[in-house]
Each structure stands twice: as C-alpha cells, then as structure tokens.
Length: 472
Image (cartoon, rainbow, N blue to C red; front, side, top):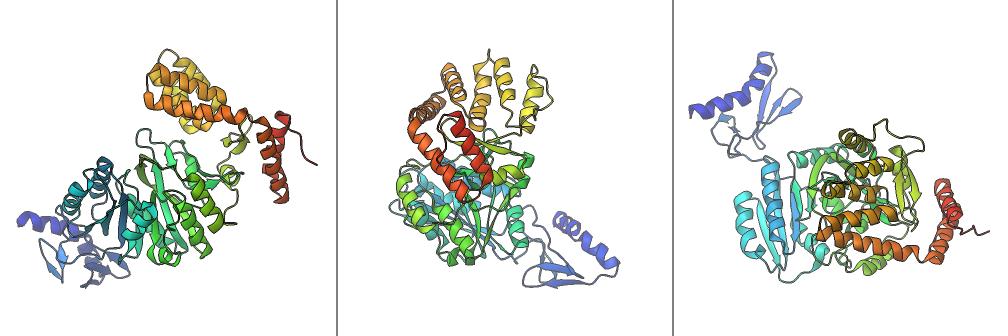
C-alpha cells in the first residue's frame, strides 16, 4: 500500500504545485479528469493500467474509466501468425489508449477460430470482440460487419498483417481531433524488414493509375513532410470519423478485395471531407499477404470507374514537385520520380558508408546505386537489397535484369519469381511498340486539353525519343 501511495503522490505532484500557486483544482467525477484553471490534466495509469483518482478520493485502483474513442476493426482470413502479431503489437504499443478491438474472421480455416477469441480477451479485457463469418465474404463486408454497432466517434480499419509502434494511435487520433475538416487519416506504413515507405498516401499518375506516394523512400525522408492534399488513402490502416463513414455508405460491397479504399476516399471527399497523411504515426505493413489479393483487378476497375468517375485527377507530378522532384517515363510508359537535372550529391563513389548515407538522403540518385552495386559486386547478398530499391525507384530494363541476376546468384526463390514476372511484363510491354506509341499520343492529347503543361512536355519527350511523332 505504501508503494502504491508513493506512486500516486508522484502523479499528483504537478497538481500540488499548481495549488501552491493559487490555482483552483476541480475533479470531474464522471471522467476522472482534473481541471486546473483552464488546463486539463488526467492521471496516467499505474503499472497495472489503473488510474489513481476516483470520486475525489485517493485509491490504489480506479473504478473510473475513460470512454472508448476508437474501435479498431481487423478483418482476417487465415494467416493466424500475422493476426496474432498484430494483436500483440497493439496491446504492447498502445497501452493506455481508449480503444476497443473487433476482429472479423472471414471464414478462416486455420487456427484463427480457436486461438483468436481467447488471445484477444486476454490482451484487451472487456474491450475485445470476435465476430465470425462462416464464409469469406471479402474485405468490404468484413469491415462493415466490424463497424456495425460501434459506439465510438472513430473507426480504425487495420489489416491483420500490420504491426504497431509506440504512440502511433495517440498521434493519429490527436491529428484528427485538431483538424475537424479531415474525415479520414492514415499513418505512415513502412515495410518491416527495410523500414522503407510502403504507403504515404495514394497518388494518381498521368495515366490515372493509383500509386503509393514515395514508395521505397527511407521512412524518415524529408519528402514525407510535404505530402498533403491527397485524393485517396489506403485502408490497410485508416482512421475514419464514424459519422463520415456512415454518411459515405461504408465500404462498397461490390468490390472484391481491391479498390474499396479508393471508392471510400472518393465518397468522403464528395461529402466535403479532406484526407490526411500523418507521417509521425508509424506502422509496419507486410503488405498484401492474403492469397488472391489481385485476382479481381479488372472487375474492381469496372466498378470504380462507374462509381468514382471524375473523382480523381493526375496529381503525382504535383506531389513530386512539392518535394523538389520531377517525373519521367520508362520505355514502357511507366511514370517515376526523378531528381532535378545537375543535382548530384557531393559524395565519393568509392566509399560504401558514404554512398549509403547519400542514398538515404537522396534515394533517386541512380548513379549512386550503380556505384554501390559495383562496389558490392563480390557480395551478391549485400548487393541485392540495393538493386531492388534501385529497380523500384529508378526503373529500367537494365535495372530489372541486374536485380534478377543477383536474386539468382543468392538463390532467393521469392525474389527470383518476383523479378522474373516483373521483367517479363516489361519486355512484353516494350515489344508492343505501336500500342505504347498510341497510348502516349492519346495521353498527350488529353493532357493538352486539360492544359497540364508538365505532362504535355513529358509525353512529347517520350514520343520524340521513341520515334512516335505527334498527332496534329
């Protein structure tokens, strides 16, 4: 008891100082909050998660509990190891947060039905619910099922292959509370192995294809601070005001595991809401672990084109420009970010440590990657990660071929398969030269009509380089 009281005294010490200065202290009985003049202070939980004030009387445990503000909804289909890691990370990284967790089991046939209910209840006593659908009814229906009956002001949709970092939810929630016009916000999602960007908002390239902003950039890169005015966010981790979610009709259940988040983003914006990235809130995302994730791309594109026509416009070039970059086109007409001309880092190209630091600061330095790979030519295992980043950020057929060779050299089966498929797609596209020229000419005409000068210049340069000519 003496130790508990000592801990309580430590929590109350800031208030005693205020009282000594003549500040009036008032206990708000319903919430456990203490008001000192115009400021609000609430005691932190003790080691067992209990508050130390209740009804104006000092206790070792507190019966008062802050009202839940967020319902975290996790749709899951098999992959129990990922779901377990997700739940455990939430419990360890968001202690003291006012949230409840709902796992929607989309007909899992692995350990999930047996293991999830007991683990969830042990990690989140009194704040966990397991809901099971006997058959896999898809992401949209799973999320909507989890949202039904939620009595919190916010809903947070979370993929089961996501793991948390300390403080992420508090930071995300505070950002939403400060900006009343924001209807949905996303944290920064990083790949767990590399801590590079997986999701920093969704942008639309000049062909209106959705792409992840600054994908594969270092997770602490300064460019992330420039991301604003987004048209869409990923639902891998998405905090939404419940009222706005319901007004938008929830997730459209016509989609089959894809584009639901683009559609919801459109509906939220049509209702007057804004979308925001909160890069100081960080999660790790293994990304697209559910089998069959891309089996319905054509169907989903048809539904999205019908429902969200006119909602999205090309903005990748604007987001790139805010960060000081431009856009260019690959030989197969894929847009990618580039550094301004004549802006190479001042770095020796024969020093691995110096190159590594320079490439963290300037991830679009293609010659830096080439120098790094030359220095690591004797060590394919060390070279492969750099080659993969180079191929993602500075794409070319040569970059893909070199990455594949390194993957074969280190016998990385997953990487071999991934880069074989990517290279095959690139070669198939390049071999359809007439189709590429037709597409470039069409994009050029459209960008002229929309008076998008930057994009006009980009497609004109591509057509000049590939002998396509310009339509009159």
